[in-house]
Image 1 (cartoon, rainbow, N blue to C red):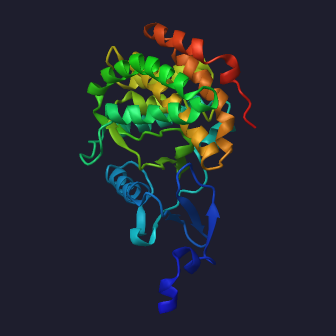
Image 2: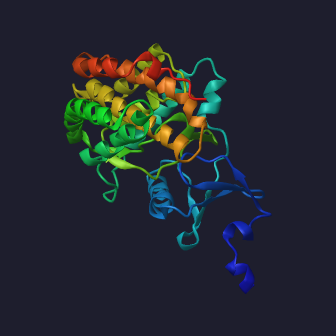
Length: 317
């Protein structure tokens, strides 16, 4: 018995669990063979990947938003055991359907419900510093593929001069629970209900953020008319929409998409994960779409100057 207690939890349960596809985090997910539970194992940044993950899931459940319930946890031994919603992701469902909008309506209804809960005071605010740190991923990981360090400093200074000023205008609207990675791969349909996963990065932020993450999801090719239809449905469901809402949508989408370019290159170069490279062209298409806003002409001109079609459409593998 003592010998058993010394074994890693993965060794203890090796005949009862099996590894399943994970996400972009350092977490690994193991499904139990005989019960609807997942073992989440992580030895890096346990505060964020296990502690916050568990706490926010339980907080959402307490507010009638379906998230994986924590069944057991042992942070010291690098794991938690959570409820298993299965593999029926909204992405898998939507890819098989002609009328995708019916599912997006359900998602928007759930998002509206999510934004009505009182944000947990322990959640961090989506601050200017956090936005800048995320934006830096673009400069640190993506731009070195194409430019010298001296040129990167110049490009960064010019982009930030405009973009950070616009981001600052959005901060006064930080009032709702923001999932921060609200896209269809993180939404599971279980027993007819939409369930949220990958919740550990939640903050108190702008109501446009999760809407924008859903509509400008780089993992699915939505047509512009369908994006507009989802956006308009959300607006119709919300009576209190500020006049700056649409501009903030464009600004925060650009920031997030640039962050994604940086993260996907980091996953490729540092972590040897190639599967995200296929989304880079789509990411650039969305960046250029959002730069077309009338108030972003100067930023649009900058991007057209520095980021040619050859850069935006580069074949990585």
